[in-house]
Image (cartoon, rainbow, N blue to C red; front, side):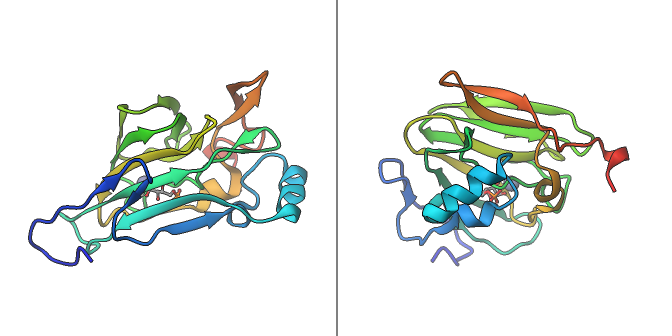
Length: 196
Ligand code: S6P
Ligand code: ZN
């Protein structure tokens, strides 16, 4: 589907939170091992089952300059040790490529940072569009009680670089404190010069 190189249309179903006609890719709790701060809570939760944390519907295009990669991602609500369900997060393999995120439903945050450690966290709710500049890693966090979904588009040759995020996470984490989403410092985060 969508393999043609003539203009084409697709339907974002914001009620069902899917792209009609596409099969989603799912990421389960087990695929985020080491990403949540509280590893004991992670293990305890995983012992109870391995739920889907998020699903995305990618509209694949040839990975060449000039093409655009787009799709829809839906994050389910929940926490692990008080830290909200989140995507793995990544830099683009082609670092100098940006991305657009547009919230369709739910409530969340977009956590971003540069390789040097400059960070920004932006609230997302339906209607909010965030421009992620080239060089900024990005992770979404569902801070609400319902599903959180967003549409995204980036250069098709951008690629994904999960490495440094998998090793130490983002500089800021989003946790529930007194019932509200709160930003805390990530104790595992080191500035680039101190990393081994
Ligand atoms: C791709 C874009 C999204 C994410 C998706 C899953 O550049 O940013 O499609 O891939 O939301 O996140 P992650 O961090 O697991 O790839
Ligand atoms: Zn991306």
